[in-house]
Amino acid sequence: MKKSFSLLELIFAITLLSIAFFSFSFNTSNLKVKKIDLATNRLILYLKETRYQALLDDKKEDSNKLWHKKRWTLKFFNCRNKKGIYYSIFSDENMTGHPNKNESLIDPLNNKYVYSSNKCEYDDSTSKYTLLTKEYNITNIDVSCKTDSSLGKISFGSDGYVYKKLSNKDNESDKYRLNKPCKIIIEDKEGERRGIELGEKGEISTISKI
Image (cartoon, rainbow, N blue to C red; front, top):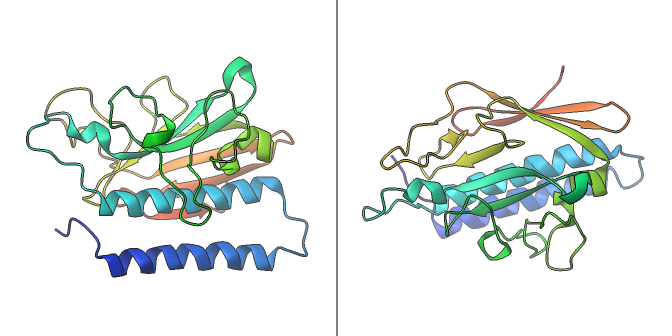
């Protein structure tokens, strides 16, 4: 099984993301686009970036039985004092379960960290698009495959598979591999809902009916 992409393939992947992003911006520049649709499209782009990063960055270490905890992950959080919802994309190098900025993915389109602290404040070095409530008026999120008390997280492996959780036990790198589609449903303050579906091999699509 192929474990990583070549530099040429990485450039191609980033180019595709750039085209998708700028095409969407051009097509909607003269239209009033709902914020929830912007949030959904941005989340899809970031999920794809996370998957590409995971395919390139094989975290397996024979000397570390918990190496799988470092897989690239998109995780949703509550802001401090119930001020909303945000997400970060990170590889948990220090294995604490909570990201810091230096562990986070850098968006190749704007060179900002895909990260926020629980203060949920704008910062010149971080992507504003992670602030789901502050930027897009998103008030609720439901991740169908979550297995704990968190809002939800999606992890990607260099093997191409999706993981709904990363085990805290030795030698359980495949323990929580996704075996059926996972749905991410977001809802805004007006009650409108949008959905994203992830397949077990990382296929990402929008849900037409929720």
